[in-house]
Length: 442
Image 1 (cartoon, rainbow, N blue to C red):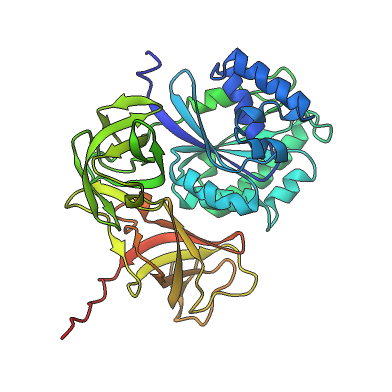
Image 2 (cartoon, rainbow, N blue to C red):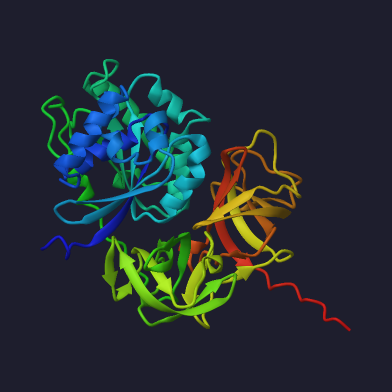
């Protein structure tokens, strides 16, 4: 099978700050031959100049100068690499708490995830604590629909672990408990002890850990399956960004979640309701005649200006638009509160993230508190909600928002509520009320 014929999967890399996500994926790119020798030499030289030699593999990912200086992954980075069975596009998700909103966008576009967990003493414990991102990212990945997951237990070369089996087993046991709470079937999840820096168990089985008899990371990636593509559904492409490119015009970019977009199609952008014809579609700088679910594309619509597209807009076929919720109109959602310093009450107005959308919504009703074990109603119209509560609530947007019911379009029906640089709750949209009637002028 040629490289072009391989099925392609989107992979998100998640985990707590400094657990080695960028280093791991940078080393994977080098090992897979996805980075040229010239690139590798240039970046190694730059790493030496900045006295960040242990970060050299991360440099292949942290492409922004600001990131290189600070040693932090800020925005989402896309790179491709081949395995035996697949062509992967990696979405490297940031680990700093204030960058989680980027991670939400990344996870909502992913077919599978690598959860990077440092086995270094102190770092692991910090990541799984109540304020650590290991827990938060695992919750988000599950809620945002990432069904396939591998856990890379990193930093096996660190002196506090030193490739020993007992530390690996300890980390695996604690992480398994966490993933069960989140809702994953842990029997389906592979754990691989790795060293992102030294390359242990990435592409080749490590001689430093003879006690580990399982597959290496690349072998696990080849065990993932391609999700069934919802090509029969209506077209939905959430806009992630929009660029003005010399010679190409206005180019919105996003991932096709459902349906098929073809050159020549008449499409509509919501909530602006702009309608135009698709002139070109590109994926990884190559022209395409059509795009199917899972494809990350850039496209040009005849007559469009940069003002016609915004992050969070949704592109559909003309006449078959995405649901648009307006101020005063309610959505009903089932949520689980994963963090709040006090409690959530009616009137609370945090930012809601769904697909690429980020808009403030107001809690207008706390309808029911549910028993998390069986979904039975524990309390009608509770006064407030606190950490670990599961509830049915009604929310209303501050401005127009494109979202869908989870049962119709799961990809556009999940939400994450963010406040104080933290994920407060995650959930799914159960229903959308009819739009309020506008009073006619006499």
